[in-house]
Image 1: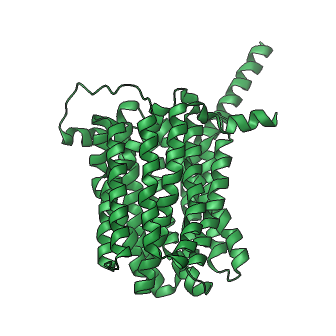
Image 2 (image 1 turned 90 degrees about the horizontal axis):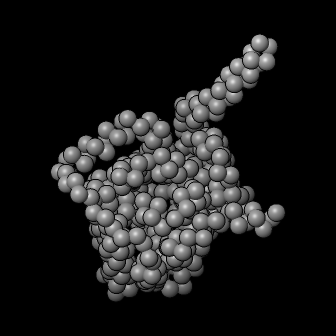
Length: 425
């Protein structure tokens, strides 16, 4: 029985292409988190400014917001596999350039920000191609929600390992080594892509103007509330709550009186909770009501952000950080799963581009806002208010998220009533 449950949790690995993708991305994501941690630490060490931390996130992610719609169109028009190969190679070049500048001591705040902007543009085309490509890697479509959950577990396992390694390497070898390791990690994902055997790409015979494609994506979302409302929830969380991690270097250095390793440990404990959330989602039964799971995890996210915000005991704070990571990851992953599962195949790239806009557009704006507010009221109070906002958002969306459950309950009651009438007659 236990063996069957484990097999069910990892059932997406029955698909060879997905297994290859998972292995390659696992290595690459560890490098990505090492670079993210390194960039944040270097910027904060050079400026001692929470606002500059927010600006760094803005520089790396706002370009994704600006160009994500074009990325979605490219994903729907062209071979997503080839688009992904190009974006992964470009990301590798960006990481190597960042490493060279740092190792040769020619780096500056504005140089790092400029390379962050370049990475943001690359991601605008990478995300809309990478997420829908998972559909093509999975031959049995009932494995798709499991594949998406395992994909999140891979990202969050990297979030657990990457920052911890980064913290150690930052102390011993410096940021340049983190950036170089990230550059080399892209070799793994490129090899995994080259080993895949995907169905031949069939280009669309209908050629539309870019404006028509953009309008078509917007109309589709407008007419599909089951997707657009989840997208709105994701946008609000990304703008007002998720940027809490912008302030983690402040907690590491000021609240806990630590160094780069402390910063890495905080990120790793959040990643540990996120991995737990991923395994939880992967273990869910296929008929689980994901909207109820989304509501519960949004509440958990908000509550434990509040608890984390004013704890000065490092061990207890790490416990709260781990549960925060659980709620955060589950909340975000369920949003992505609901959106992808309910999207039509021909619209999937454009839908994911709107997801990228909701995430990469709102998160950098939120990071700027978070950095500016924390300069006025301090990091602990800022994160506390973000937790409160998460609870308010959960309350606002409760009716929609519980609607399917209520409809199902009403239908069951109606059937029971009809059966009773038939029996009486």
